[in-house]
Amino acid sequence: MSKDGPLTGIRIVEIEGIGPGPFAAMMLADLGADVIVVHRPRSGPVVGLIDRPVTDRGKRSLVLDLKSDADRDVLFKLLAHADGLIEGFRPGVMERLGLGPDICRGVNPRLVYGRMTGWGQDGPLAERAGHDLNYIAMAGALWSSGLEGERPSVPPTLVGDIGGGALYLVAGMLSGIIAAGRNGRGTVVDAAIYDGAAHMQNLLLSIAGRVEDGPSAQPNPLVGAHWSRTYRCADGGFISVQCLEPKFYSEFLEKLGLSEDVDFGDHQFDREAWPRLSNRLADLFSLHARSHWEELFDGSDACVAPVLSPREAFASPQNTARQTWHKVDGSLQAATAPRFDGRVPASPAEIRARGQDTDAILAALSVPNGWPERSER
Image (cartoon, rainbow, N blue to C red; front, side, top):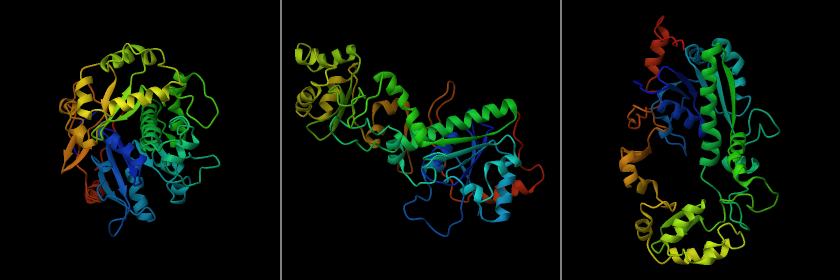
């Protein structure tokens, strides 16, 4: 599979999983890495799983039964020429398969062994089941998500699985590969959603200055304010507002004809006034359709934007210019990110069928020198 990206020449072996592990491997493939996903054998579709998910795009597919000695030997041959491995099982599963880090790095000392879990490889919760919401709840990230006095909201899995999980795994894999290029030694990356979700709060802490105990979202200056929330419009659509800095807040008030309103002008950071001012703005935004507010704030620095569905985002002028969203076979996919100077963003890569590359990969492994050696970096 032809690759052209900053990670061209890097080979990653991914053991089939769900959620943040496949997403991390997709991101590496998007950036040019040769990602081979080892799918497990199955006789038919699995309920609740898509047979050709977007997260498999740009990867080659090899079907192996890792409980089979012969197929494990095939995996070892593959790892001998790989830069990294990604797996997302609970701690101890790969070891019971005879595929733990020590054994795999015995085959290839430069291998970066990426482990994606919710709770991490150790600690009292390591063996416990969990999901995105549980991890960010225990990490303190969910606590500040609700309006004051209300229950914490359930955010999309972007906060935990992707933000706290997949992206930290990508950073860990790339860091390990860079280090292996310098010293010839691989490493084990212990990427836990719990850790990443906690780490991401450092930005919030740098804004809030301190954290207080309590049932509400007091430490989060971006939750509950009338200038940091969404409002329903007359047509049922929504508008987002987040004009934190005073100069943007002033432009926001000017656009709404509220510059001379002392209640708004004097109480931007007065928490006691926020509910009252939020109600006033809610009444105001409910008077017109979303399109009216889009037109009013178009071209301004008031930090106001419509809340779009992915399909609406695809049709927006921003996407016309950036080509961030693509329609592939009638379905939407977001393009590779980030972008690099001098490289035109490619359209989303092909999603290969399960096992489509099995014969070609096995044939290459069976021929002496048939599998390209890693280039020295």
